[in-house]
Image 1: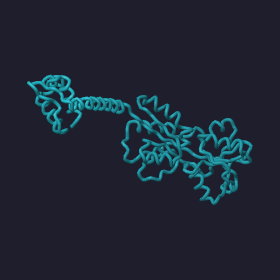
Image 2: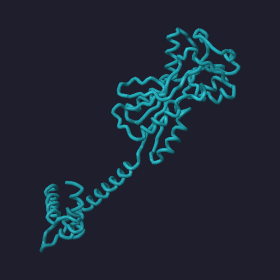
Image 3: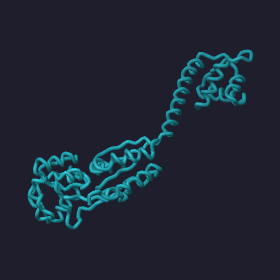
Image 4: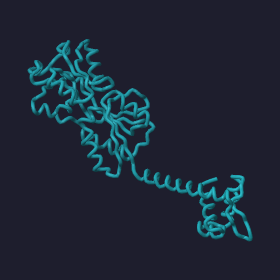
Amino acid sequence: MTIRHLKIFIAVAETGKMSLAAKKLYLAQPTISQAIHELEAHYHTQLFDRLSKRLYITETGRELLDLARNAVRAFEDLELHMENCTQTEHFRIGATVTVGSCLLPSLLEDFRQRKPQVDTFSFIGNTAMIEDKLLKSELDAGIVEGVIKSPDLISIPMVEDYLVLACSKDHPFASLTSFCPSDLEGLDFVMREKGSGTRALFEEYLHASHIHIRCRIEAPFPEAMKHAILYNHCMAVISVRLIEEELQKGTIHMLPHPEHAWNRTFNLVYHKDKLLTDSMFHLKNLLLQYRRPEIG
């Protein structure tokens, strides 16, 4: 039994004749007759009384008629809904907190201007969260600075970035132009949360240099980190892109790593089995416009 059977049944019930139903549906009369016989065989019941070459719907037929109309109406609503869905492309972009704070707003606006017909959704979290959502197909693409662990995800370096040692203008380090790893021993820091690519890179550096610091504040957001730098005498290792305004104002002092050990990239990430749509290629091309930080 199919929707086609139900549509034929409704037409026969409403016209009272198979010939009229055939004309209404632009079908041959034997096709109409066969469909009714198949319905009656399927439900093991008689849907019409055939008297003097006329059809009279049975009580069971009347019950089926109401249900059939509801089923056909629901099916047509489903078809219309899915047609509208397929006409609108949806593109879900995930970004880490750093990317979401310094790149994503302008990136989304550029994307909207080039692809206004695409319905976009954005999620901001740390690298581990973005990776998890990509693996669960809750996102189509991600832009992250951390290391992707899953072999099922493709990670393409797209945008250059680097971390700097940041402190307030009143901090003792504000008079320095360079530093060595041992200078950081025992100092107070504000750190990103675990799962952050920024934190992972800095912790790897500390471990390799055998340096121990004091994590006084753990903050998942750049603004909270900058407040800890400015008002709580903490230092931070943070993306230079996130403190451009404070650097211009002179409220935060930065020290790049002398050996460029904190250089990194923002990577475009997607599942290896993901269908690469036109939106994915547009996103990739847009990212090339943000290749280098303005402060370098």
